[in-house]
Structures are given as C-alpha cells and as structure tokens.
Length: 262
Image (cartoon, rainbow, N blue to C red; front, side, top):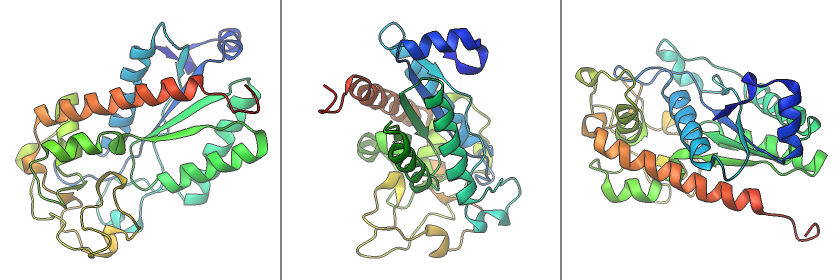
C-alpha cells in the first residue's frame, strides 16, 4: 500500500500522471461508551481503506492519505470525556481545501471513506462545492452503509441495537483486535424510541428522514445499542462486506468517464 505522506513530490507527480486513485479515510475521536476506545470511527475507516488499497494493488494505482481524525460531533456527546468537537463549517472548509490541493497537484479521482455518523452531509457538501468549482467529482463512501444488508441478515440485536457503540461497531472493533473491554459493555441504552415514519434504528444511514437520536432518547452511558450481543465473527463478516462493496464501487468509479468526455 502506498501512503501519500511517505512519498516524495516527484513520486506523487508520477502517480498523478497515472491518474491514481486517492483514498482519504475520515473518522472521528469521540466517546464510545465504557467499552470502546474513542478512536473507534477512525480505526474502522483506516482499516477499511488499508484493506481496500491492498486489494486494488496491481489493478488500480492507488495512494492513501493520512486520515482526518477529528470532526464534528453533536454537543450532547460532550457529556462524556474524550470527544473532540470541530465546527461543521470548519470540516466543510477543511475537506474542500484538501480536495482542491489534490486537484491542483493533478489528481482527479478522489474518494472519501467515512466511518462517522455525523459527517455524511458535511462531506457531501464539500464534494459538491469542489465539483462546481473544478469539474472534478470526488465521491463519498459510508462504510456502515456498505455492510447494511449483510449486517441486517446476521445481527443479533433488535432494531435500535446498532446505532452508536452498539452491536455493529463493537463487532467490527473486536474483529480488528482493538482495545474493547466487554466487561464494561451494557445494553441499558438500547435505543427504544422513534417514530412510525423514521424508525428507531437509524443504523447505517437507513432512515428515510433525519431526526437525531441524541434528541429523542437521553443516553446514560454514551452509546445507543446492544454491544453485549457483538461478536468477532459478526465483525469479520461485516468488515469483509464493507471492503468488498467498497472495492466494487471504486472499480466502477475509477473507470467511469462522463458521457461528454468519452
């Protein structure tokens, strides 16, 4: 795997001439309850990108940027230590300027790989603005959404069990071998509320509308879900699904040319 920051300027210039695919992991450092490290979102984004880059080796020239490790989290998460909170407009501007810098260096195929639930709209806004300014269309992948169908088939928790620090993230972190203290996992904050139109399980971008869980049911432990039902086996299946679907998308994205350019 080629890491952007490890390479010299001439090496990166060669990759730009090869129309290399640039992958940018996007995570966050925020509280994830008593049992998960604050870097869970970051670690998941980095792991997916690294595995994807390895799979594309020899097929698509690919280079991996250092991850965005801090971003926006809702104010409610400040009730627990460890949450780093950066303003929404700062994130949009940061991503905008990163993309512009890459484009000015000659790169035209750029994909953000996001693992943090508060980021999708912000990343999409930045990508749209950059496209308007440069005619370069970067893409945004949401890792949890990539595995949504697979997870829904194998999950052990009921709806509301995999929102923040629940079965999904805990399973993936167990598989990746990160610091997970299952003795501290609790299901007391299983998410039980919602509406008939916007279901209580807002996992993986599955809601038809937005209504923040943090404003509906007050968390006592800093999570929403049922992490006690997590397993390394579930994590492996989910992680492999994220990687495989990401690879499928990236192959399509990399080869695509707009009709007026073909």
